[in-house]
Image (cartoon, rainbow, N blue to C red; front, side, top):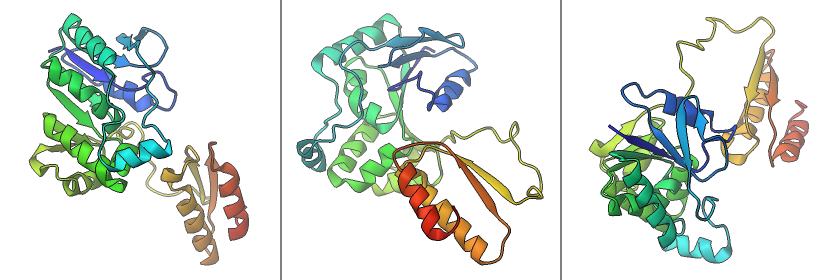
Length: 249
C-alpha cells in the first residue's frame, strides 16, 4: 500500500512528532508531501514539496474571519494546486492519504476526492479548537470529516469535541501523538528538590499561565515546589509579568 502523509511543514523543528509518525510505519514507507523547503530525504523517507502558493494556515484578516464564520473554505487549494496534487498522487500511485491537521484536510480534501484517493484527517489541537470556536468553520470541518474514511484525534477528549461538531463516533479513532511511555517512563517518586521543568512554546494554548497559577497556589499552601519554564514565544513578557504578580518570579 502506498501512503502519502500530507502536512504543512515536515521540516519544522516544532514538528518532530510528524517525523516520529512517518517512521512508525512498518509494512510500507510513506511519501511525505509538504509545502516547506528542506531535504528531499529525511530518515530514509522521501519528502515532496508542493510548488504552488505557500501554506500559511488560515488567513487572519477581518474579511477572512467573517467569511470563516459562514463556513467558507478559505484554506482550500487553488485550481493549480489541486491539479498539482492530483498529478502527484497519480505519479506516486498513492492508495491512501493521511492529512495531518484539519487545516490541511480543508485544503487537500477536494484534491483527494478528484484523484479518487481515500484519506484520513488527523486533528492535532489548534485546528479543532478553531472549529469549536467558529461555528461556520466547525461546519466546514464536519464536511471534511464526512468525506474522510476516518477522523483521527491525538487525545481522548477530542472524541467528545468532534462529536459536538457532528462527526459520528464510529468514524473517530484516537491515536496519541505523545512520547512513547516505555522509552521515557518517569521515576516512581518526585526528585528530592521539588523541581519541575516545563519545556514549551510560550503561546496561549499551551496553558503556561495555568502552570504559574498552580505553582503559586502550591507555594501558598506551603509546598516546597520550584518550576523552571524553558522556551520562548510571543507571550514571554506577559508570562514573566504574571510570575512577578504571583510572587514566584
